[in-house]
Image 1 (cartoon, rainbow over the protein chains, first blue to last red):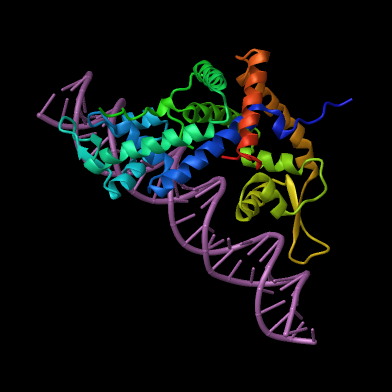
Image 2 (cartoon, chains in turn brown, blue, red, green):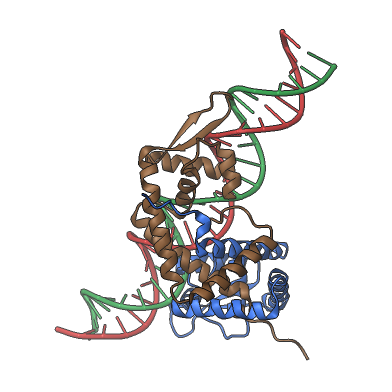
Amino acid sequence: MKAPVSELTSHLGFWLRMVSNHVSQAFAAKLGDAGVTVAEWCLLRTLYGKPPIAPSAVADEMGLTRGAITRLADRLIAKALIRRDASVHDGRAQTLALTEQGDALVPVLAELADRNDAAFFAGLSPAERDSFERLLKRLAERGEMSSIPID
Amino acid sequence: MKAPVSELTSHLGFWLRMVSNHVSQAFAAKLGDAGVTVAEWCLLRTLYGKPPIAPSAVADEMGLTRGAITRLADRLIAKALIRRDASVHDGRAQTLALTEQGDALVPVLAELADRNDAAFFAGLSPAERDSFERLLKRLAERGEMSSIPID
DNA sequence: CGACGATGGTTGACTAGGAAATCAAATTGA
DNA sequence: TCAATTTGATTTCCTAGTCAACCATCGTCG
């Protein structure tokens, strides 16, 4: 007697991904209206309220490669939302920082993020939301997850 | 007095994505050892135990475009795991079906999926896992999510 | 002091997906 | 019946990542 092959839907990971994708796609659509992608938002938010920071540090924080940060930064520079300057101390190094426009945009996008999150989890009671958050954070901690999730 | 701009980490969606990405990446690595991607696994599992099915139906089920299915199928055909045949009834239509090798591989990959899921959620008690699943399914139902989540 | 390995960043080749144009076959209707 | 529309699938072009090769500069040590 052979065990049946498990369904895709029999895994918690399946439902996790399903819900996660929908939340992100809804958020991506809202951000899209504002002319930025999710990755761009993450970079903007990462730079917000901090002194200029090295691309390599951003790469570590966001869990992307340096090459990805170079290109991501290129796009945001083209949109005049961030600035790239040569480091004073190190001829190889660069720093990334928000422009005034970028700085002004972050609160607007943060508001979108707040609303997206609220809308999606409105179906849960406060107690359920709390429980959900606790479980997610426990899984994150246990799995030693740290970098900002992009895709 | 201005409200502070919310942190990335202040959103449930952030933690959801974080955990979801780690589960998927761990699974992707395991599948990678077996020579397939997550999307390929989803397609293989979708074809398993069914009569030959149209690419367009697969696209709907998996939530990918038809173009994506064409290419995904191309890759799996190159690996001799699936077969594409012209429909008898309709000169435009094709059907996709597992080859013998594909059929034999699915249970192996399903086992990987089972183990990946079990390992990741081992940190939760049965009651917690149950609660987590219930919440995810409620969110999925409420958000009218149906297609298989790929990325 | 000067060569040489390490480090910071960029670039090229590749992968995987989406949107829209395209092609061929089927269906519809005047 | 046959022209027009619709439908199934593929293809082209674009976006956004990775990996690995590369370039320049820094720091070290002989």
